[in-house]
Image (tube, rainbow, N blue to C red; front, side):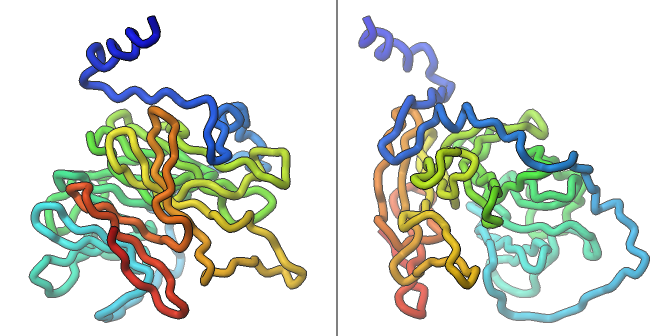
Length: 314
């Protein structure tokens, strides 16, 4: 009887993706523990949303600079017109494929810190991270009209965080939802990541956990777990690719410094089918910034080789 139901289900739901959380996983992630954990410990006092766009500065300052290179830039390339969108010093810029001067996406002089732009598959929509509205990094969505000035009023907030912050948004292949990394802090100030799903059509939403943290081997408290998925992207409609610390939980030495040996490769790369709850190792260790080609056939990532970063494609 069960085999008949599993055969019938795809026929009854041809247009919808249904995610049924697995009861257990071989990677140490137990969805039931994540769902039972209540995120009601922090903050210590109620948060007051801070709309920084409406804040009046008594002594406004103007910073003017001219640059031809930058570091630690988050960028994306338009799938049709190949316009390059990138963030620098909290401002999003658009650069035509032919080159020239980068054009600010929003009118200059605005206060919010904007970063991490991501196009939808057809290039008609744009995701980005911003502390506008609530004073905490949330994900925003807006129509993209090309390398020209846009009005901030056309952007709407997708996430609804006033304490935890979210980053690294990626469109689902349907463009009806996104996956983003939600960060948790506890006794260690470095955030612990989880992969969360948010709908884009219903306005600001609380979201749903897709992949939680790995249960700590040292602490019997899910809230103190420090290892989880980050830099998550979609490989297909029900499959994610992400990175996760494979060396050890973050710990502090006697001098108060975090101990990580980057030369051994801290992050591994994994692929998880959400429907089956099965995880596959793509890179055992030494991977960063994964990018999947638009046809899904090639995967690029960065690896450290001594004092250099090298780009690999598999």
